[in-house]
Length: 418
Image (cartoon, rainbow, N blue to C red; front, side, top):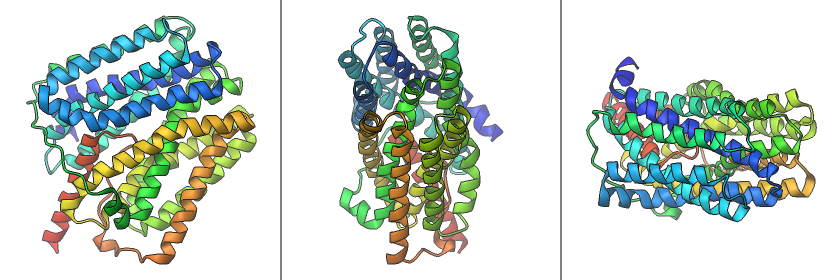
């Protein structure tokens, strides 16, 4: 671990600042949208726009990097993010915000690809798993700490948007000034979508559902908070607690997943998350009960993405894993685009409680499908399953490919040992 930090601290620090900036802008826009009088439907479209841009960026970024290089791509896209963040308080209509969110989502996706390319290139076969673990901790730490910055200024003014722009601008310095060599970039040719589905129907269905879960948690938490009358400090804690739970639950669930039928663990996690969501729906009017429901739900939902990727890899050959990762990202991205719009519709229909109800329904559906799949396919032997690697929903193609490389390397080592 110390070797990873010594070799990649500048990259990790830059990524931390990026995550702080990105984590704050989602919450801030949810609060500011309410102040501007946006309807739940309008703000849900604004939140969905980020994930539409992110999905487009994840597909376009590799070609952009090949054509103009990592440094130019990173600097140009980062500048666009900083500019867009400053424009939000100047153009306070939901259509302009939707366009800006598409731009920001596209740019963040490509920036992540660039930064993670450097980080992955700095990792070795021996420390790739530790690098992924540290990277995930950095991501979650950035998102959680971002929520505290919401208390430093007035969401109705300009100051917080300036802070956002400065954070993103400062993140470039440690990354661009790092002595880490510029890595070669080669995109892996993906498998066919139906081919991946036939390999793991549960993995594909689960990753699609988790796209909706992640985007709803990430994009609509502040909208729920304002709709239920939470104060600004309460909204800040509520938005952060989902990720605090994910940070705490990630490694215990990963450890357990390598030692039992992953489908059974997926089912258990889905049932527990469904219960948390239902309790949030019924009792969320009591603030501390809403916090407890968010902590449990986020703690279970965040590790589930990596669990589903590991389960899918149990049925792939090592040389297929990186190729399948591209399709998993696409499936997750489509679900993420739909998530905020659907949860916004449910909240508009039954009120703020629809936020937790929507999250509960997604987990209940995934749990039911996992139970069905257990009846039609035997579980792989525990000795043939791949090791769990921590990775968050919404990861860029590079982060997913790094995780797939780790799986492939672990699989090859297991074969050699056998």
